[in-house]
Image (cartoon, rainbow, N blue to C red; front, side, top):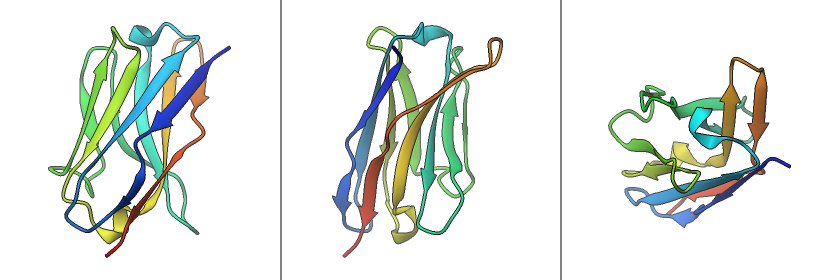
Length: 117
């Protein structure tokens, strides 16, 4: 059974930081392309950041220079360090595991991030 369990969300003031974690089980984590997505109320889910099994990263323009994605294959965990948070970063954040070769695509249950003063 595949599970992606996110943690680390919460309430933070503008300019603050949060670190999200996503612990995976039931997959060969090191072979998966891992991503963080977010969905704000009334908006479509969007890619925030992703890291390949080789360690290559890509980011949405809106978070470049503020967010950092990383992975620890020994712990089957992907992280999203979010700094200089803005009001517009408020959303539910979802972890995704994708393996293109097999079409495997898994989602976590989401963790809420609220940026408010």
